Image 1 (cartoon, rainbow, N blue to C red):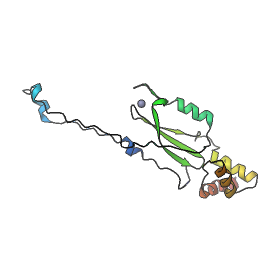
Image 2: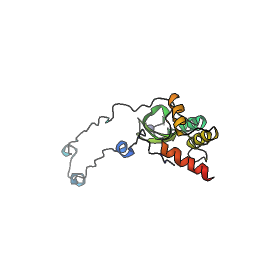
Image 3: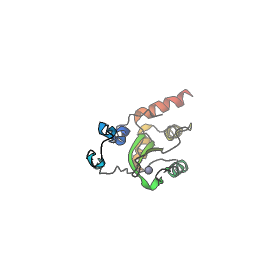
Image 4: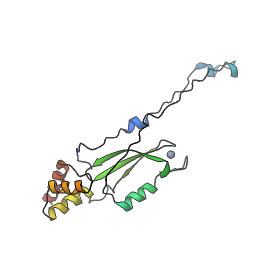
Length: 171
Ligand SMILES: [Zn+2]
């Protein structure tokens, strides 16, 4: 569950990506039994240029559950066009503190897949682990941020840290 309102978070708009043009010709001519092949309505060919020519890229380091992440990457396979991970382009990242969800789009069949940096169903998220660890060694959000900054790992915002800290305090 994402509770972060981190300003660095990249919002992805799946709807924009999924837009596709499909126009069906509902001309009555198709139903005309006298219509010969030569009389058919001329086709209008429309070539769509890719709207996003500059590829999305990410930099720095990330905290990932490596086993889970590699397993999820392997699962990117679509039988229809026999597409696999090698056909996928990273199009966006939605980040929630230390945890990220990456959106991949197949450049063959346009299918969009989401892969999280860790199993979001597990009880102990990387964000929670970082807060528990910082509490146990007696540091706060400022020190955690400095540590992650020197590692070039994006950290959770103050609000997320505070909320998770409250959860620990209540336990
Ligand atoms: Zn595909």
